[in-house]
Length: 88
Image (cartoon, rainbow, N blue to C red; front, side, top):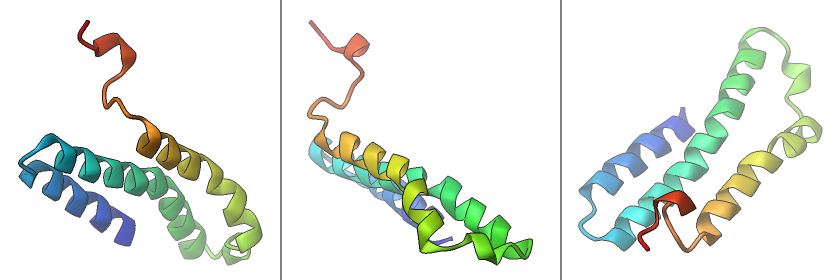
């Protein structure tokens, strides 16, 4: 729930932003949030179905590699558009 709230809040602040740098900052925060939403949904399902034994740090760390890599790549990308849409 907290990740979804972060995503919604960052989306609202992105829309409310006046300049491009503010909008890009909040868009990057959204990437952090929505890359974690599938994992939080999985954790909720495992918890509700009684499969809590799978909710360990040993299982969580490998699952966090892709969201972490996604967030790092988004924050390090200096150009906010795919290469096919750049003005030449």
